[in-house]
Length: 168
View 1 (spheres, rainbow, N blue to C red):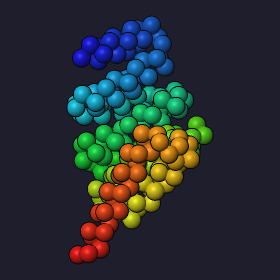
View 2: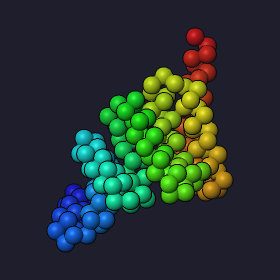
View 3: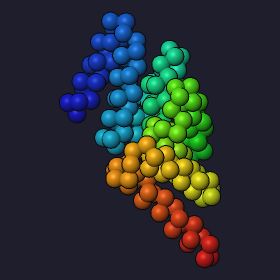
């Protein structure tokens, strides 16, 4: 919790000093930390604030990262899959604006959206998204990168799900 208190302090001090971009980025970090600590409701509030404020201030890198993380929080942790997909569409807009399509940041978004599609019963769409994420990570990060290993595992899990639904 020391790290969270430090981030909260940075947000307050940055706001007080008029350092708006630093305060927004600190909110995004605080939201990510809240999710890691298991406080998804707090994470949602902080990440949504960071996404909206960063977008309004044309801080598209921060807005993209906040929206991508928010897609995961809302979809996976809070189980609101349809809402996660809508947030993912906003994240996609930011990813495009910062020229990160088909880059690792985009792959992370695609994987989060694949989860939400899968949980919404859209297995075919989930597979297509996860396959694209794996392709991007393989090309951008190489065969041995941990992110690729994790994405490949998720893809295998989706394929197993598809196989189990076909046998029914």
